[in-house]
Length: 411
Image (cartoon, rainbow, N blue to C red; front, side, top):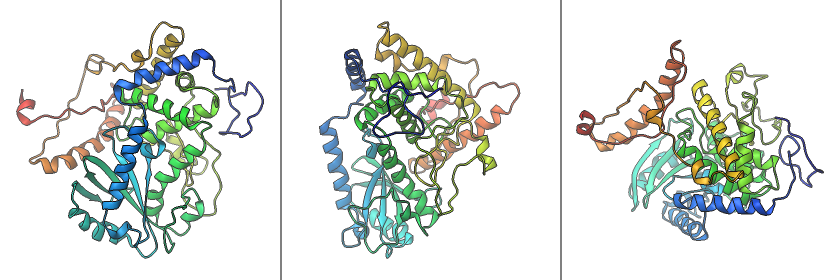
């Protein structure tokens, strides 16, 4: 894609290239964007002030009710990240949160003492600690909302309300697990810092995320893209069209990424050098990085590829969906169709001749959640084996799972 500025330079330059267009929106762009908002409403995707306030009170309630490890006396703080921090959180979605603790709080305090206190807390269900994960996490439900809480310990006497986690200096001499835990917040904040207009970015991201979910290509675990990857793709389009409204940005999203020459990486900023010597994505240095098929690089140090799970099959499926999205949005902008068509789900069960059904059965409901999670985490391995079979051209996983009891399966 040739990224050439059509006009004069921006006062502030966003991204690694000049913008493609600085054209201001026309009256018709406002009309199409309003129609896009109307199309999102039935799915609960429009961010209204009441929802923001309700979620703010929920987070406040969570913080107030959490045990004293993160109270003002202990000096810890809670930071949200992911979709909640980006301002695109939807009802029923998980909330990602980071507990930042000062130097006198140990990791064992979080995963043992704090975990035991959580067990006694009213309103908390399905509590489990995954301490050996790549990013160690405590998962639980609070008042019906799923929370993923990670932990980072900084060499500070207390955690200030004005703490800026984007500062690379905070990573110095940290445990690698703390660095990974901080990464979610650092990437989210950096994305928001790198887009020209946050409201246009948010509405566009809401539309693209809903489209990806409806089309069955939203799942980092299964080799498609997760929330942060979709956010970075949308942020790149916002950089290329800094004055465009959401409807135009959605169309340009499909225009750019249906033609993108993968595996050329998507970058929101030039990777910065640091003397912290942490491993970063760099195919010039790391041979393994050269095999990544669809690299989308996080903007915060240490830069990582957020899409290392993508396979030849999932990339092919996503590129076809980008092309379909371009066709539909072209029709919309020619007045031959409307936004609901873009959000129509594909008929997965009529698309192919051959299917494999995976059934995960547990003896108890208590064990079922973890067992299903383990099975899902191994599906990518199955897809990899199928792709290596010379008689299989494509292995397409449907991210939607179907629950049922054993008797239903026997039918």
